[in-house]
Length: 237
Ligand code: ATP
Figure (cartoon, rainbow, N blue to C red):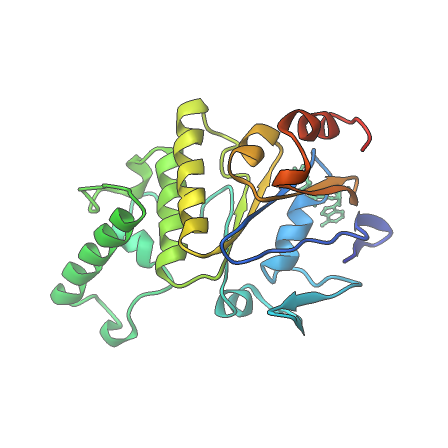
């Protein structure tokens, strides 16, 4: 796959496989092309060459809505949440039940609260107060809510844009646990990161990008963490 911005090569010759029940990690430093790749998968940008295949069929994604309809959910670093709204309302943002259009009916609200609580619990997140504004949760907890949301609304592919970038060690561990839970729920996960340790902890496949080109493609059993770290740091294959 290739993408150019004018004569700037953002991606060229890059290939990524995503399988149900697996985590494909995309690793690369700043400017490697990670965001460009996400934007193509999320339907925000069109690629200039190469093919995007879903279930073996060549596809073009004309918009983020189309990507979502095809089962591709993307969780960006700056999560699209409304901080002052309760957790449950953020959980349903953009996916409100069509029956109760306009102000939510009392019954619907109760149902949506319960649904949110249950969906979080299914992922192992025991958040008792789903009425609290989502802005009061930690960055890691907000990532976890976003992951649970994608699983609940039936995403087949979950794309995570550096979910641990702004987190400390403990919170990163918690988020990675939920990333693994999404994989175990049968989703194909694309984990974008520049942390080889985080990638190796949960990943099944690893694609290394450097200045828009492939610098390596490995499965978990074909590379050690030390070698992955070395390649990330600039060593050759
Ligand atoms: P970062 O981690 O810093 O976000 P990245 O790996 O996500 O980096 P991209 O943002 O995809 O990398 O950028 C890849 C290349 O494409 C870079 O050289 C960047 O300057 C360039 N680029 C990205 N977006 C645009 C744009 N809209 N117009 C022109 N050049 C762009």
